[in-house]
Picture 1 (cartoon, rainbow, N blue to C red):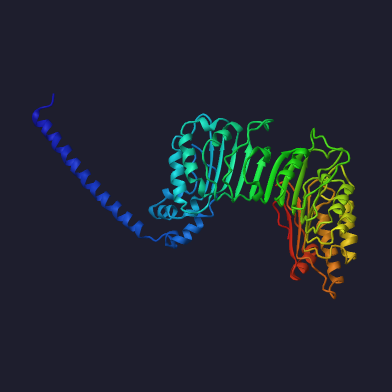
Picture 2: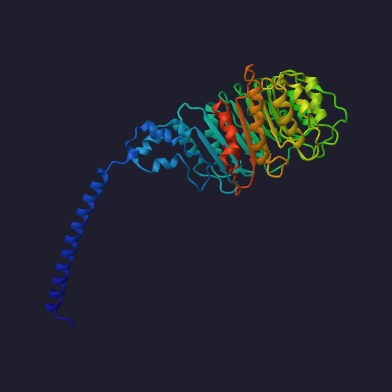
Length: 472
């Protein structure tokens, strides 16, 4: 057992040791403080930029959809430093886009607070709101409070994208939204097929400024909104009968982009075309094999059409009859080849001398050769107003990148030289493109690209690309 004198000696020695360590600790703290002061004195180039430049850089940061487990810009900017936080919070455009995905089971307890903060920081900038959710998300925790915030800020929403089931859309229909600034609307039906007996949704009745509408699977007749003001309609997954109904309901709409399905779509063998003078732009893609009876274009006549884009193949005779029937002042035409019809001939282009833009997608070798080697370089009256020419192919098409590079430039130069004296050379832009796998790269010697260099120097905008390769 230690004596009292021995214990006192140990305590004294330990106390002395503690004082030494405390002195060393104070010395280290002093050194740390000095280093921190030196660090703070070092200028950071990014912090020397004017706040408006930093804000502009922030605006280029992509904003992905939010959910319950991931933070995204611009909230991340507020966590870097005080300066960045002040800049982010006081830049309304950073908060103008709000995109979320809401899960049915977890909901989002703080969503109402987040939305209130987000929308308030956007100031008076028009809001872009994107709300998607699992089936039944409107019944999840915290959602009624969020919808109340959305209702309050609805007069400031300019662009709205919704993705949800009809049950959840019906819940939104019970709120009194005011869409006075809504310009574009997109609704995608998810988790279910199109309802056969749909109620008429009224939540967009107040959207008097609405100009663009995009629906996936849903018909315009399901929605009570000011259709007479809509300029553009984009729709997906329709039958031919649906398309006719859409055209009938939207007599003032000038631009249509439709994706129809030929599967189990009953069509007349000899359609009776309906004339629509309001249509200036028509983009159509028919999914599946070409319909055995009729292409959807055979049901329409558009005498004022300026843009026609065919995203799927069409029989040459059907297209020729449509062009003859419509006699439209067509300025832009997109033709897409396929595996069933090989009847598209260059003669169909003679029916549209008003063309300013022509895009050939996956053309057959016959159409390509007739166009490139015969009509365009040799006949000066063929497409006399053409300013933009684009030819694109897939890897397994008949036309390859070697064909495009070797043929097109030389034949264009032939036409240009023939028109040199008359001043009839109108072409301003050329695009050649081949869709290839990631691993493929195209490399051509300078002599193969010399004609394109000469065309570019002469004022032609030239682009030759593979998917991940810039050839020229």
